Length: 289
Image (cartoon, rainbow, N blue to C red; front, side):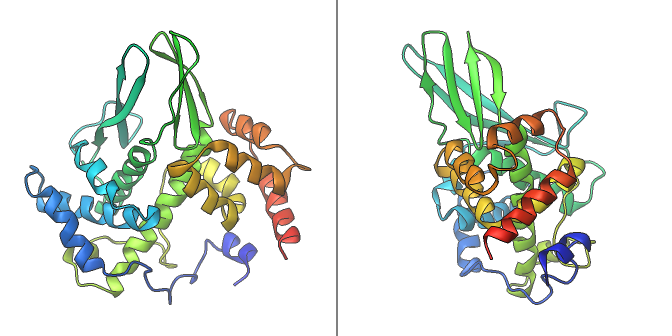
């Protein structure tokens, strides 16, 4: 099916015959559960964490993710802000010559919400946690630090955040890749018997999971997100690299339309339109034929 048609019809029927790419899933599930034995979680919450870690460790090809998440506190009964269904708290440790930034706690609102939405929220926040661990802290002087959290760059002065560059770029890719992770997770129903997975009801007839976060900006940027090369780079660089490599790849494709920096600033100002991203997507189609 052509990508333009997939976009216009909401990807209907695209995944009906697809199988999960996750191999040896039962063995991996048991390995992950061993890390959670001493945690005070319900059986449902354990399943939620296990399947999140299963898809994330598969995406990033790194089993150390399990150890990273094992150190994070998870609160399924609270959120600090009324305007969100999930949020992450970070730990900042300043020493004489260094700054350490680590994910500390994740808050999830689990009241009066469908289980599949809670699962997606947890996965979304765990992605933020995992891709923040290789944060490349740089110290300019005694009062100014900068570090990377996924695809965004955060600057602190006198221990206070003064600037976040690329926040919405990071969020749209984190949301898009979470949707892909959730779709992969739902496809596992074909491979393994799980009462928990069967209780996750996806209302999209295509089988593709569509989250409810950032709906307007996701709609306007979706033609761009369907550029597989950029999405793969975004996934890799968020965890392993630097936003500069993503920006260079973006500029190689779209510099005659808009630069990566200009696009990032438009995202922050919420001025990206569907017409702009459609134009970028059609150029991508033209030069990659």
